Amino acid sequence: MEIKSVMVIGAGQMGSGIAQVCAMSGYKVYLNDLKQEFIDKGLSRIGSNLSKQVKKERISQQDLVAAMDLLQGTTDLNDAKEVDIVIEAAVENMEVKCNLFSRLDEIAKDHTILATNTSSLPITEIAAATKRPGKVIGMHFMNPVPVMKLVEIIKGLATTDETFAAVENLAHDLKKSPVEVNDFPGFVSNRILMPMINEAIYTVYEGVSSPEDIDQVMKLGMNHPMGPLTLADFIGLDTCLYIMETLHEGFGDDKYRPCPLLRKYVKAGWLGRKTGRGFYQYQD
Ligand code: CAA
Ligand code: NAD
Image 1 (cartoon, rainbow, N blue to C red):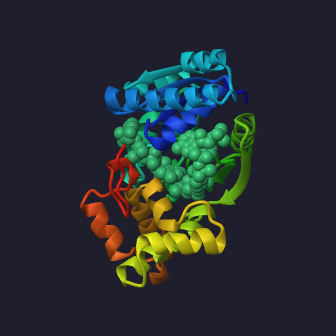
Image 2: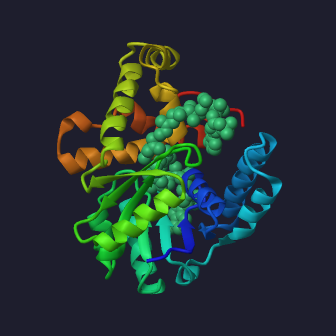
């Protein structure tokens, strides 16, 4: 099946990145969010990312204009009837995703693939909210999307080989490196990454060390590009908490219990970089 057009749902940090790489690869992209202001923010983030690439002479001004022309913001989910694949990157919440997938199933054409960028939620359960489980799949990009090469592709119980092949081809076309992963909580990436981040939060909670020093240990001692607390702020502490809850519930194992300090920060609205405060404070 040939994919020519894409709808990305959620114009946040992941959705805008996915829309950017799709438009740069020549796909027509509908970028959907709940409010026009969220779409405008996403589009302006894409514009500024591409402008930096022009300044660094990595792409031409014509490439920028061509990509921006392929992007169309929309608050109307009915535009899903225009596309060959929907990539959902809304908030990490099963109720929100099931609701979206059931509506998309009614709107989209029969051939349209419904993919989710979920970090951890079961693909099989999201697929069960539709009457086309064979065409539902996980397409898990990493943050920041324009930079990170990996895409985890996750088959639900009913996902067909044809759907998998189409999404694998799309990932290659976006110049990403796809890896096939089975449908278990957290897949591979977050099953390994998030317990490390949660443990780093426990080391702050228990007063073992400061966020700065914990990050320094992992940067200088283990050569990580970002310390785990900087990374948690970068991912979003709400997303980190949702993922830990999915691991905890999905495996029923207390080794995945979210740190109370993580819960406290999320309840306070300290969600990291996107709200200006998490383990660190941010000016812009
Ligand atoms: N959006 C787009 N591009 C970005 C960016 C962003 N948010 N941040 C950095 N970049 C680009 C820069 O423009 C620069 O591009 P060029 O090479 O074209 O010049 C390049 O990335 C390197 O940036 P910098 O030199 O400014 O900074 P850096 O060398 O420190 O790299 C980083 C920044 C790539 C983010 C690096 O710190 C890193 O790799 N951090 C770890 C990221 C990570 O672990 N991501 C996975 C998170 S987990 C996940 O995504 C899964 C999940 O479900 C939660
Ligand atoms: P974000 O908070 O930056 O953006 C989410 C966007 O979705 C917001 O603009 C919000 O208004 C919009 N939204 C919420 N409900 C919606 C709906 N019903 N219809 C349309 N838009 C809706 O979040 P994010 O960090 O971009 O994460 C999005 C998804 O990507 C989550 O499932 C998350 O787990 C996953 N993910 C996140 C990361 C990360 O590092 N942050 C990495 C990989 C995957």
